[in-house]
Image 1 (cartoon, rainbow, N blue to C red):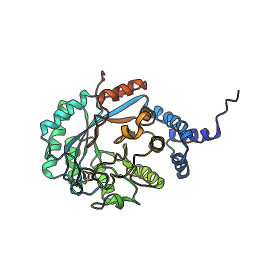
Image 2 (cartoon, rainbow, N blue to C red):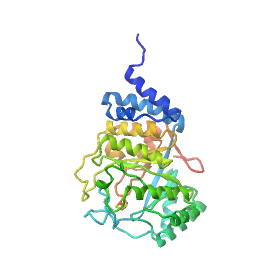
Image 3 (cartoon, rainbow, N blue to C red):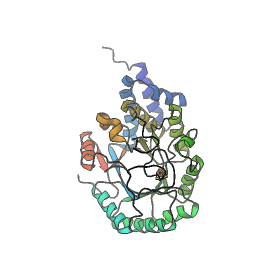
Image 4 (cartoon, helix red, strand yellow):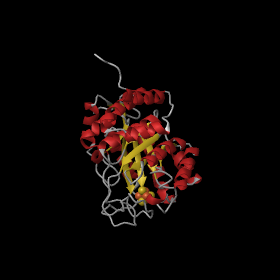
Length: 338
Ligand code: SF4
């Protein structure tokens, strides 16, 4: 019997070997991953799993989002149903109270969360927003014991420092897409504004969570540019979203990306970001559909209980999927009993 590894499989295994040494794929290798056939995709996922298992074992970091202030955002991000520029059915409410945010953290912890992420639909946080978020963070750290992430838009040095001083562990600010096509996605702030905010957050002492959205009409080159740019900003957490087109937004007409392509995209992110959290973020259920469990072979993190404006499959289905894959949730500060 011929047990030799097919030459095409060797390419992916060589990429994985390098990634295990934190040597990034070349641009040509990145292109080969994205352009590979459906038949090749499971070999790529297998190679990515070797990297996932080496750096992250069989643990899954579960994140829970709290939409702390929803809708009426002055920015014009073309994918977002919370922008005031578009007529969408998205919920609108002002900043939640501190007590509501702390209660949300308690529920997140009960759902097995590694991290609780408070998000506001704003260009950047007002001083009043920061008062609430900082007070909620201090109480969550003291009373709940779950890690805290915030996503509040554009920061300056002073605002970043306030958040870090309050105990925020990580700040999310996605690059969203490549620098090349950024203006086609957003016009009210620039790609450089986004990079600068990640710098302020990092300099203040917070970890950087930064990712993007796939499926907004970009080329494969843009996906590769985004993937490498996220290393340059020093992201220790990389959420990979797949567009779930929202009614009323300029991108409402776009189609979900194909699940096998999405697996190759996730695998590329794993090879380029071997030792950091790669999260299968928004659009997981609608993009991967019946292939969804395969996501866990590549990503070591997911959101549960839905996204900012769309529902997910729910925490019990997520926990069942994790157990069925022989994996287990990783809990901040303690064991999780599902
Ligand atoms: S993505 Fe954020 S900044 Fe852009 S419109 Fe939506 S809430 Fe506003």
